[in-house]
Structures are given as structure tokens and as C-alpha cells.
Amino acid sequence: MSTATDLDVADPLAHFRERFVGASSDLVYFDGNSLGRPVAATAERLGAFVVQEWGGRLIRGWDERWMDLPTTLGDDLARICLGAAAGQTAIGDSTTVWLYKLMRAAVDHVARTEPSRTEIVIDTDNFPTDRYVAEGIAAERGLSLRWIEVDTSAGVTPEQLREVVGERTALVVLNHVAYRSAWLADAPELTRIAHDAGALVLWDLCHSAGAVEVELDAWDVDLAVGCSYKYLNGGPGSPAFGYVAERLQGELTQPIQGWMGHADPFLMGPGYTPAGGIRRFISGTPPILGMVAMQAMLELVEEAGIEAIRAKSVALTSYAVELADAHLPEVTLASPRDPARRGGHVTLHHDQMREVTARLWERDVIPDYRDPGGLRIGLSPLSTSFDEVERGIAAVAEALR
Image (cartoon, rainbow, N blue to C red; front, side, top):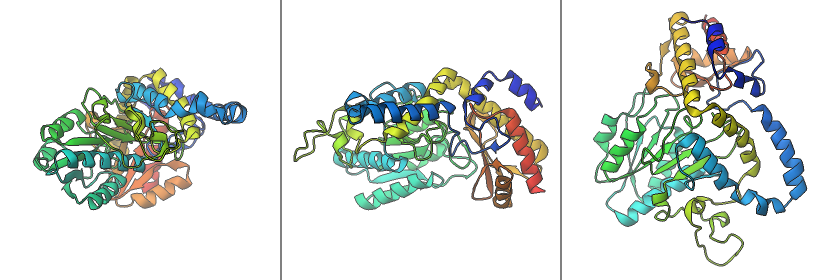
């Protein structure tokens, strides 16, 4: 096994680490897949925004830049991280709100065009919000849920999806990277299976955007949603994004009709006329401050390149697995061992991991815990070193003892 020092010296992305607040400290941060470290340039950028744009331009900022920021920044995100052409991605709202809008728009469209399709397919280990939103929409629209039972150390396979989709399927909702196990789904194949059954598919990209290569257009994806506070380092509560394939934009009616999605937001007329393109899926006033914080990280991702970031992610998680195999004999791997099937984090299972996580936090080693018995190690490629991984796994071994 290579040493952490050797791996850090050979790492072509090592120099990016110094651009993050706190990365040079002794703290071990294993939770970059829940909340990314702030980019150092973000503080200066936010300060300049307050003084120059907000303070200097005041209300004029809406006409000069802010009104278009949800779509212009969405296009940047699409180009850099999502493998999507311009005009299909918008930023604003929370992940939950985007999930509701796009799931509801999808099933309502199918109800108009193929009313016999009355099922939403979703797996039992999908992220809780996705499941809760799907349950709520099914209750609202008189639909039923078709559950895929999955192994919590893996995720949905093509064989499992093929067994449950059919002539009654309206929408399939899937995570690209499973939040618990880091299972990396075969997105193009699963999308093809859903389409062959005549269904639409919505992908949750929360644990993949910025860490895993995504090709929404090439995969022929219909809809996608993701957050920006994990590997996109936008900060706590930073806005989410929604993707709607261009071919569907004129067909879907989004259910939260707000003034910002109107064809003429300042007409203030008595009726609602949706804007053209992706803008019709925006609802209310966009969170401009949150978008400003996203920009610095998107620039770093573009500079590093998503392929290089993915390669570093694979190297980090593989090193964590090697160290766990060598130093944590009492622990089992609750993530795929094959790095091609694994996203940007690793989950280690032991019955005492809840208590171990609490002990580690007291020592400035910060993983997170997920039932059942899972210590989750989230390794954000640009801000995490191999030395940090080595020190963190050593701390896990000591806490278990």
C-alpha cells in the first residue's frame, strides 16, 4: 500500500486544498458529502457583492444581473458538471421544492396523455425526502407507489427496475449515488429501461453533482434535481437546481406558479402565463446570495476538470477502503467494493458506530452516522488529502477500541 505522503505528492489536484477555509488545520473532515468546506474566495466574493452590487447598485441589480442569474448560473452548472446543453437547468428553491415541482409536473403530464399510468416507481432506500415527496404526490393525485426493495449496502440494479416497470408506470425516481451506500447507479441503462416501458424518469443528483461525471443529455434523462451544498460547496441552505430536458419543457406544467416563472413578471396581470423554456419552472424570487457563494466552487471544478475530480475521488475512497481493510478488522464495508460502482463516499458498518461517531466529533474528526450502524466517510476531492484520510481512519480504529 502506498503511503499517504506518497499519494499526496503524486496528486495533481493537491494544490487546490489550500483554496478552502480550514483545510490546513488538524481537523479531519469526513463530511464533505453533507456540507462542503467553504472556498476561501467565497468570503471575498460575498463581501464584494454586499458592497458593490447590493449596496452600490441596490434595486438596479435585478435589471442588471440578478433576474437572469438562475438560468445563467444554471447553464454554467450544466456545462461544468451535468453534461447538459444550455437552457435546461435553473437554480433556486430547495431540493424538496424542486422534487415536488418536477415529480408533480411529470405525473400530471402523464395523467393528461396516458391516464392508465398510475404508478410511481421508487426504491425503499431512496433519500427520505424523495420518498416523502413521492408519497405526498401519490396521495394528492390518486396514484400508487411501486417500491423496489434494495440492499442498503448497494442500490437499484437494471434487473430490479426491469421487473417493476410496465404499462402502469408513470414516473421512475432514482438516486444517481445512493446516500447511504454510495452505490453509483447505471444511469444510462436505468433510464433506457424506464423509457422502454413508456415512463418518465427523474434523477436525484445530490450526491453526484461535482464529484461524479454526469451526462444528462447523452443519457437522454427527462428530469433531474440536485443540491449545491455538498460537493458544490455553496454553503448551508444554498439553492438547489432543476433540469428539464428541452423536449419536455413545453409539455410540462409546473405546479407552483409564481411571479418569477411568468412570461412577463412585471405585468402583474390577473392571470398566469408561463414563461418559455426552463424559466417556466422557476417559482419565486431567487436566492441571489446563495448563488454568489456557488460561483467560486464552480470555477474551481471547471479549472480542475470533472474527469480529474472523479479520478481523485476514486483514489480517495479506494485508499479509505484499503486502510479500513488493514486496520479495522471488526468493521464491514457497507459500500460497493468496486470503485466503478461507488460514488464519493464510503460507509463502514459496526454496531457501535453511533457511539464512535460521537467520540470522533469530540476529537475534531467529523464523519456522519447513518442507520443501520453506518459511519459515513464523505471525501470531497478538491479539499481532502490522503493524509487526512489516513489520520481519520486511525482515529476510527482508536475510537472503536
